[in-house]
Each structure stands twice: as C-alpha cells, then as structure tokens.
Length: 288
Image (tube, rainbow, N blue to C red; front, side):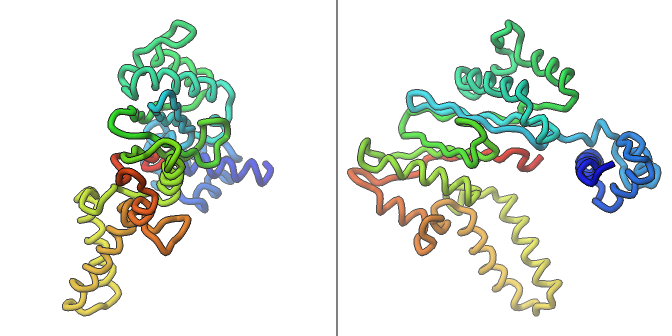
C-alpha cells in the first residue's frame, strides 16, 4: 500500500471510528489495510465503542446559494468524503436541489417532497444516489432570505463553481441606497465568512454558549493557580472580550482592524442609517 493510500485509509478510519491517528495506523497494519477488519480490531481493543454504521458521519459536501430578483436561498448537502463531494453525479444533484430549495423558500420538508426533473421525489432520488455512490449523503440545512424590508447580499469563499463552495454567507441590510452604497453588502458578507460571528449584538448571543464560555474561563484561571479573589474580575474581562469577538457589530473589520463593523456601517450610511437585520453563514460540516 502506498503512503497516500495509507493516509487516505487512516483518514477514513478516523472519520468512521473517532479513533486517533496512531491507533488507526496500527489497526490498518494489523489488518493488511482492510477497513472492515480494522474497525473490528479497534472494537476488540475497546478503542472504538460505536459500530461502523452508527459512527459514520457526513461532514464533507457542498454549500450552494441561489439569488434571483433580490431573494436568496442557501442549502448544505453533506457526504462522507471530499472525494464524493467532487463527484459529478453528486454535484448535479446538489445543483438541482439548490434550484428546488429556492422555489421552496428554504423549506426543507417541502424540498424533500418535491419532484426532480426525472419525476422522482427528492427524498427518493437521495436514496438512489446513496445506493449508487455508496456513501451516506444528507440534506443538512436550508435558509431563505426574501427581499422584504431590506437588501440581501452573499459571498462564496473559494468557489468551486459559480455559487458553489465550502463556505457561504448571506446578510440582510436595511438602509442601502441603490447605486450609492450597495458594495458594502458584499463586503459585510465577506467579513461574516471570515470572522464567524455568533450574533449581531452581544446580548443576542445564546446564553447557553455564554455560560459555557464563562465556565471554561473560570476553570482555566483556577487551574492556572490564580487567586480566588482575582478569578471573578479576570473572568469578567475575558468574557467581555469573548462577547465582542463574537458579536458582528463589535468585531474588528477584516479590511481595517483599526475599525469595528459598527464604524463601517456608519461610514457607509447615506440617506439612511445602514442596519444589519439578519445573517447566516454555512460552512460545510461545521458542528457535525
């Protein structure tokens, strides 16, 4: 087995079992490169607890966006490996789903029950594609931004084709004046793709996330030997930084780190103040 094949098998085995690099290599060596026997070997050793079927994850794939007349839809479709994500049958399937997703206004249930060009329902075509390719494929999530009460903009990071990539962001803005400050919309979408904000404002960040972050901060300070009376004060400062770093308006502008996003909105406002109404960022496999 070549080094490349070995590395590919190690990666695949890690994805299927959640086991570390070293143990996966040992298992493959002991099993002459056989994936099935390697999984069995790891389970017998007590390293891989879950069965292959349960542990298979679809964390690769594509994100697609469609824009028409100011409305924008986005969809993420996952596969198990990047190899399948480059498969033309998979790509064609994703392209048609993106069109249907737009027509369905981002309703994933309606999408699944829609007919494709071959007259077969999306959900049934999905099963057929899985059988043909031999990998788990999932329609993970969808969103739709209508043009009511604002203007929508999107950005595709490292597009593999037009409107197809691994990271896509959409932002809805109020206060945009045609032919005056429209370019700021795409720039903010680009910032979102790069900076991964959790919410528009600090007070909109999920309380569960904030509480967890505070718990981690305090534990880290405690383990570093900081005095108890200092932990609360230091924690407040660290949490404040976390909230600023993860709220869109308070983030440092990627194109000029001396300014915040809120400053950029003010600078580009014309007849009316520009406000961010909503945004979304899809990154393939994130959180899977």
